[in-house]
Length: 256
Image (cartoon, rainbow, N blue to C red; front, side):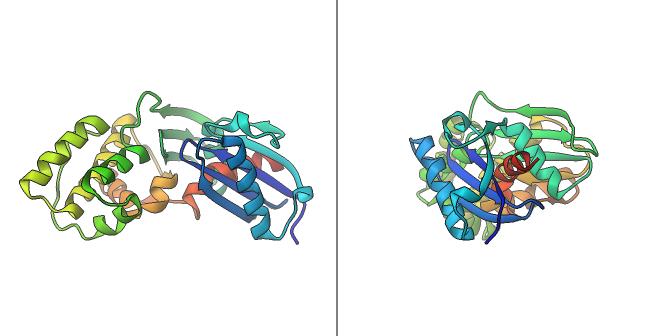
């Protein structure tokens, strides 16, 4: 059984993630579940799931750091860190050099620039609306009558480039109705929505140097990473578990 362990809890608006690492920083337990409307319960349940999967008990967890929108709701956390800090820490753990991190989450996008040592040089975050985020894709899926989990497979079937001029959820929904009326195919509309996400991200800030993409949207939709690579003209990389990057960063803070 692993131990001592260090826990990172990333309570996002859409999903709660827990990562358990050992003293070497190796990931030994993980859990991802919907945050729902009770962030405290989501954190507790996710921790129990991660412990159960690793064969460990709560007594094996030495420290826990919380992060994310609901980080203040995690009673068992010994301290908390911002999402920016944890995503930076987690991404730099896997890519220990100067990097630009793009995190596409359920409710916001972040661009974080780090130096060789992982120090933050700059960051941008779209706090005012959910344009170009996971919520945007959920609304598009609802409009075209598919499950959000189906979008990646649909995008891969696209044979025609369709442009969606806005990444605003409200305006895009209206635009999609026009595309449907025009006879555009669903796979092409889905890929167009992915292109809209990429457009939003690339307009937030110049993407310099080596770019690392993280977050649940990236984890579930690798096509977005391919489109990002095409947009900036060089490969965009991802860590082993993109959706857990913030939780892993929090766990590493707990270990340190």
